[in-house]
Length: 309
Image 1 (cartoon, rainbow, N blue to C red):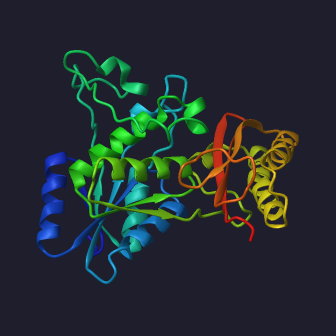
Image 2 (cartoon, one colour):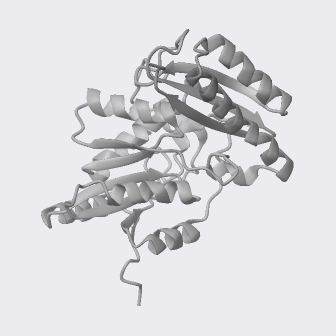
């Protein structure tokens, strides 16, 4: 027999919606943790946050596992994105906190029902395929939106679909994907989703590297070099808190550190925390965001800073 805490695995959209509605009828809050699988301790911290999100009310935690094709450009790593569904379910069962795992085979309408998932889903449009997209027009610009122009369109759309299927009271997102978290918060506000969005803090390896499913693709040498990301953020935060609030100076020093370590910098930006507007000076709550390539792996990280008093 399955252990009492083993989550129910649900693949069908209608079954997932019915399951969530039954939990709510039982007086439970439904908390959703959207993931793309290949789970690590960072994801499990989101599960813990979801389990504690109802303020004493019974809560049913749902973890979705779905590698969303619409957020990948044709040149990106959809085909090689790591996957271990059986391992993921074992990890979630071990938490004793997850009631259900939603892992649909596909969330998009396609002219050919048997078609393989494809980056961007551009081939799925037309008379019968998926063609409805959600854009968070300001917040999706800049940073990751500059180098991944279809990314936030795909993220906002699939998250809205998950919200409509699971109908959660609460949804938890990691703040490592800072721009993504803010995009989802804005979408929920603007479209009147009755869902509380919780941003959960970054979980790091013992050496400081932010946990990411893509870390598995780093060679030993690349991983050592990638530690320059978290180290540069710590130095930047320390400099800002010690009075150097000039964004350009801090950004230049970070780019220099990352480049000297062998990274290819995508961006380093210092922006206001909620609006993501670039700041010339750190004179209000800010976040320093960075994306850099080490080998063929693109990593992102960030650190929040409260304005010096």
